[in-house]
Structures are given as structure tokens and as C-alpha cells.
Image 1: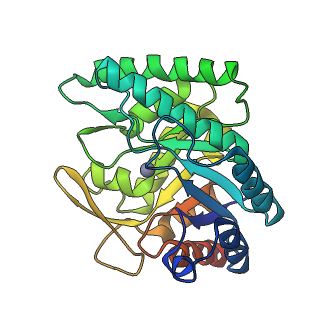
Image 2 (image 1 turned 60 degrees about the horizontal axis):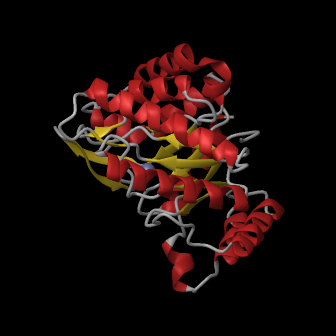
Length: 285
Ligand SMILES: [Zn+2]
């Protein structure tokens, strides 16, 4: 959990890839950019961790040394609202991610909960709630205590993960972490974040549902986003003025509510936009 607002990229930034930097080099390079968070991407993982325990531990120690807080983005191949066979495979995938997160000392496994499919939304919610409770129990039996699971607000209307659904899950399941993808919220709800007041209302709603501490400690994703009436279309860089939402507004809200979120940039510019957001917030402080 962050002691102050922290910023970092989702995965390895392109320019680090060109120089063939190892994962550990990436942490040093981020430190040089004065970034202090990193989301490790386990997005294509199956039912087993695809990193060795020893390497994960080394990576975690390196992150700590550089004062970079780690989170882990879980497998994309997860659907807790689907048929039984799919749900069982999804459980294994999330547990594999949680295991690796524990090894590297990542504080949260972010994940996309699933798709409604033909299910009514209430039923999808009940399914998801039941499965997450089972997963948390299994994590405890496996001795995974330092990692939280973080259902993310999703950008398409066909995806499970409205703000309300995510808040309800976080309220009802232990060992969960609120993950607010602001761009997804904006896209899903047809551009809901246009004014400072829109951001304020959202944060106030979170506070009503989860209390002040969980609100202050929220994990965030932020980019600009293009959407249609079905929701999310694609991510854009902060520079592109024709798209929203506007990070300056979130920065104002962060200072107003004294939030200390971890903010992960998922823009095509990854680290550069993380730096830009950090500097926007610093300017206000
Ligand atoms: Zn995500």
C-alpha cells in the first residue's frame, strides 16, 4: 500500500525494450525517471506462474531497494461469470498470479472479473462473489496473506465491472483492493468524467461504500480513452486533447481528498505519461 501518491507504467516501457533492458534494469531506469510504482504484466499466464520463484524474489528485492511499489496485472484469460469449466480454469490462473505476487511482494493482483454473457447482471454478480470468496479462502490456506486481489472497473458494457459491482465486491470479500480504471469508467458510462464535480461525485460514492481508508488507498489506472456507445475503443496519450478524461481534474481531487493512490499509466507512452501525471500533481502540491 502506498504511503504517498505513486506513479509508474503498466509493463516495460517501449524505449527500455529497445535497449534490451532486463526486468531488473527496468527498475533502476524507472528510479532514474523518479517513478516509484511498476505494474508487472502477467496478462498471458495460464494456471501456473510463468516466472521462477527465485527470479520473482530477486525482482521483488530489487524493487524494494529502488523504492518501487509493485503490483501485478493478472491473466486476461479469466471469467468468473462463465460456465463452471471456465470458472475453474480462471481460479487457477488468478491463484498462479497471486502466488507470483506473493513471491515478488506485489501488493495487489489486478484482474478483469469477466463477461456477463447471457447471464442477467445480478446472477453474474452472485457467481463472481461466490468464486472470489473461495479464492480468498484458498489463498489463505496457501499462506498468501500479503497480496490482495483487485477487481478492476471495466470499459465495455459487455464486461462485468461497473463501479457499483466493483465496490460491492470489495465490500463483501475480504483481502480485496479497489482498482479504479478511470478511463474505463469514463468510456463505459458514455463520458461520465467531464468536470471536476464528476470526479468528486465518484470519489464521494466510493467513500460512502468503502470508507475513507480504502478510498485513500485506491489503486488506479489512467489514460485518455476513445469510446463508442458500447464503451471502450482504444487508449490514447495524455497529449491528445480531443479525448478525456483530464488528469488535472483527478490531481485536484487527489489533493482535495488527501488520497495516496498508486497510479499506473496504461497509455501508449507508458512511463512518459506517468511522469507527466506525477508532475501535474506535484505542481498542485
Ligand atoms: Zn486491466
